[in-house]
View 1 (spheres, rainbow, N blue to C red):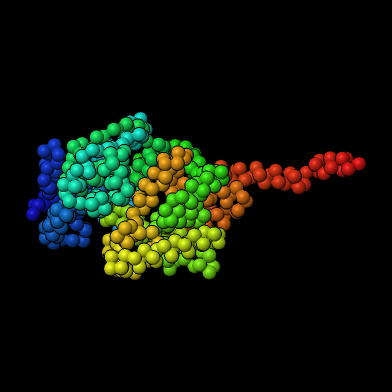
View 2: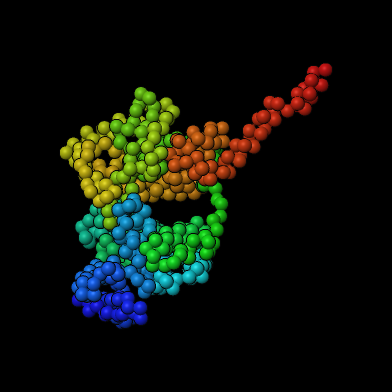
Amino acid sequence: MPKPKKRVSKNGKISYQFRVYAGYDRNGKQIEHSTTWRPPDTMSERAADREALRQAIKFEETVKNGTCFDSKTSFREYSENLLENNKYMFAPKTIERYRALLNDINIAIGDMPLTKLQSHHLQEFYNNLRENGTKQTGAYAFSDKLRPLISEKGLTIKAAAQKSGLSAATVSAACRSEHISIESAKKIATAFDRQVEKLFEIHSETTGLSAKTILHYHRLISSILAQATRDRLVPFNIADHNYMKAPKLEQSEAAFLDEEQARHVLELLNDEPLKWKTAMYLLMFSGVRRGELLGLEWQDIDFDKRIIHIKRTSQYVQHMGIITKSPKNATSYRTVKLPEFVFDLLREYQAYWNKLRNDMLDRWEHFITITLADGSTQTVRNDRLFIKDDTTPMNPDSLTDWTSNFVKRNKLPHFTPHSLRHTHATLLIAEGVSIPTVSRRLGHSSITTTSKIYVHAIQSADEVASDVIDGKLNPFHHDNGKEEAK
């Protein structure tokens, strides 16, 4: 127990200082925590001595529990503790992203005391990200050792994929010595307890990060320092706009297919397996997010009214696997009406789905255990539209992998499943559908969100509107018509 050090000021005020040591830092220096406790004026000196002992014990326990912060607390200590204590306030995917960002942040400024951190330190960090960041453009990994290793372990591609937390398509590509992402290669190597450099050949080309990505780092740092201000560890938030400018965000239009490209994609899908054709059609004609698509169950499909109900989303989170959670926001709970021919395709796919279930007999999992966002599990009826070979919910990355291969096979302009959501919205706006209607269909939290994302499409639609009203009411056009009639 720390021994309180009693002090009496010139005016007779009593205070007690406590000092506790908590191991050593990475430089071998002993970590010291200290605080001062002042008793109320009404407390007698003897009572203050007794209370000081209790306060000293309480302070020591706080230090041992790792929740003691003072002027010497580093950004790393505070940020990691803050994230851990608030992890249940955010979606698992959000926490995963925050941890990845925080890892890079703490490499740069983590060892600095909160009170010593200044705006120029952040600016130097952002400049480094912009010039020599962690974005790996054109980076890839490939291996001629993976297939023999999987065979040696007596595993199937599917089992190796489950072991690695990846889609079977990704592991299959890696076994064929095709290029996969370095992140995927790391997951495979970790699953087989190998160093990634020993199992894969790495082609790495690191470039600077975009302004949008750097802004994500800045916002996380600012939110951490804002809480440190509320905890009275720092006098103000140096990342606030009053003290520094946030990274400037370049306005960029969402990637989408134009009408001709979209029609071509739909034609090509006629030659693809029914499952993938159905998935891509739903993305194109409903504008749902990838996770919302893979969260769909047959009970969400109303064939009579031609609507689908968005009630849940499916995501892959490291260390948790595939999770089922509520949609992104309150407005994401919605119904979306689809054309009759899309429902004809859904009927065909449902017949295929039912036949698959009947053909698999005992291998079909009629009830599956799903993982929820809080880590708890729930046993539910197996009713998902899109499933893996073992009949459990499909990894969303599998859809992205298939789309990437589809694009390469057909030499198409690059697009992702999310691009089809943007395509859906852009084509609707171009045809004069109102922004509120498009916003509700997409499940955006506000019309402002829709307007910001699709500003170019809105401007184009406005030009068309101008031409329409010009053709209808321009008096000079009508006067010319009268002259010709004469």
